[in-house]
Image 1: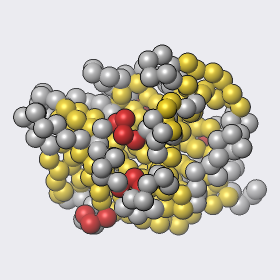
Image 2: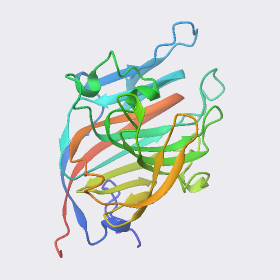
Image 3: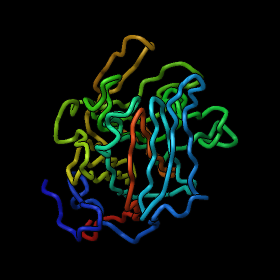
Length: 274
């Protein structure tokens, strides 16, 4: 389905969203001056001479994480159907720096960890290293992943991937791997959109639907033994994969330099004609 044209600053309604929901009121927006509402989890690299840094200027959050993983959480939970939008840039001028690549525009949303008193803000567990996030609950989307060279893969997952250290079956969509429409163009601002609407989940990149799922779809489930992933196709039902209806949003990156702007969260409401 074609996207519904809205004003340039509003989320688009596309794919499964058409005739299902519409954009409601603005719940949150930021110029990132609310620094007390952000929690940065930067992976330590004690033997590395590569120095990470963060800065804020003219409404742009700049995170420079050479050779390491980093997650920046908004310490403000959202409940119910929402759409998150923001703009992100991989600057050209630092691509030659050691430990920096144009890669890993990653996202967590509606994320929680009910098994820990501090939840996803447990700094003893969640360190910025990617594997430390495998046991949390939530949705994940990524453009520009792909190991050491980066900017090859485009993924969607429903977490957890592990429970008590053991691998568990989880939604893992990767059919858009290698599609240049959804990979990073260094020096170009990209627009990311993340939807959670009562089990209907979407990831949009520059206004185009990358991945979306709704109840009744056939989806891919990955079951890993930490060495050889095995994928099977199953029906996506909310009995098997309950909808995540509340939690936190976080930017996620690895060995990269990202600049973020225009973060907004809107309420989603049922389409008026339904």
